[in-house]
Image (cartoon, rainbow, N blue to C red; front, side):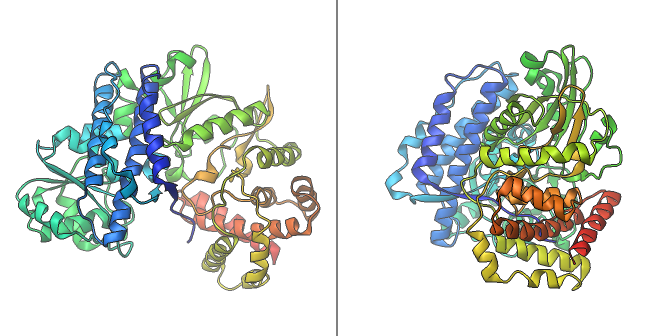
Length: 562
């Protein structure tokens, strides 16, 4: 099934460098504690993106990975930021001194590419991967180890690990090739450096492993081929689990016996009382009077009326219920990267407009909102009158600079997914959308930060605030292929999720999008795309009952279109 999409940004090199310097300067004015620490991590992520972009640009130009003055300069700056993060974390936020990033002044900016392609790091953005986990895990490495980070996210993580273990050597590599059979292209100079250190310990740093672990496996294959003993290769992944289902047999065997160093989120941020998640918010919420209650993994169904709602446990964002003397609060992970600030701003605007619960603050990747208890299951007759004003507000309030997937790509993914689920039974629906018709509609698209979660169970009725839309701030920036779209995407989502009649659909289209025939056509096209996307998305859901129920619901809606 086709549902995922990588995110990358083409950015001006000077603009990215300026942003790094701005964040470094901002540390002087930040209050201490978790706020200063979060800003330092934001600096680290921005500087990591700059280093990754330059390393990849040099790789693209040469066709292989090789040392360079620019990469060495940026790694020096990154390690300085890494040391500042380590001091802050290890001292329970007591020692917070701005890092020295003066090494950036040595960059010969005029000799660098004018633009860089910077990959959004999925771990920081979506999967609760924190730099501090690698700081703690790296303490088990021997001093003087050789550290290799796998780009993208491994760029910065390598600097963290190298700082902790006083690495003799640190570099990054870009795994390339077939998705389940990655390899590396290493230049002669870097080969010589690795060969000279082949009897030492090498630490491979990356997130994952995912479906195959082939990136980590491919680099380990190269090291063994260069004379490094298998038992001298140490892995620092983001989790302690096995390789995915598509792993090569040799890689799986190596992984089974390898030294793997990882520290889980809960161990670091829940079990450690001095720096635990509730303490980050005490100035706003007060001190916790009960242990955190985790609501992710579908557990949110136990604290509200939607006990039979479908859930997607593995891919849900981490969220907790915090209880203090002043009330109850929801703490939800919305990302460590720069997008978190815009998500918080969106949450504030939605609350001010009366559509969503009240956001209180953003701390180190977690958004705190006031908990709104759902009194009962919201009926369609209660929700439907709110949908049009809600979507009209989103369309006006949250314009996007660029569209996500094109209509052609959304349609191609939907055709594939529906075909996988239903065979050729629905092909006639796609034949109605030839390329020229789709291209004409693409000109009508006005991208916004869509809601992307119009499912019935995302709406609640509270005693004090009436109908509210929850989970409404970040799905246009998720790890999928959709991204920002015309608000017609959410119109289509509402029509599907509430099984709206033809008359209801027409009224909603006119209320949100206007009287244009093009808007009616765009909604019809996106309805088909939405159905295909949802069929694919729920095919990956880890809870079988939910997956079966949702796939059946969406295929029935496809049959209704027929």
